[in-house]
Image 1 (cartoon, one colour):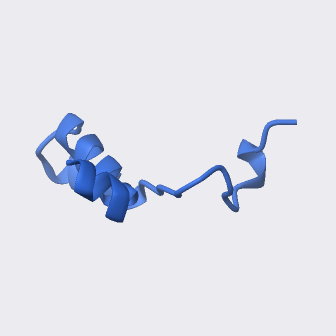
Image 2: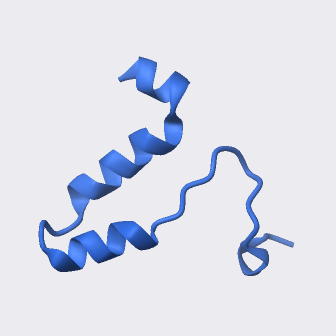
Length: 50
């Protein structure tokens, strides 16, 4: 798991989140909408703290 965290942290968090979602069509739709960014930088202006 530490190798995955070092090499591809986005995949690790996506797998962990997928494990918490329902195993149905709804869960598949939800995981497609999930956006994970490495670091504090992201393009979503509404999410920025002021």
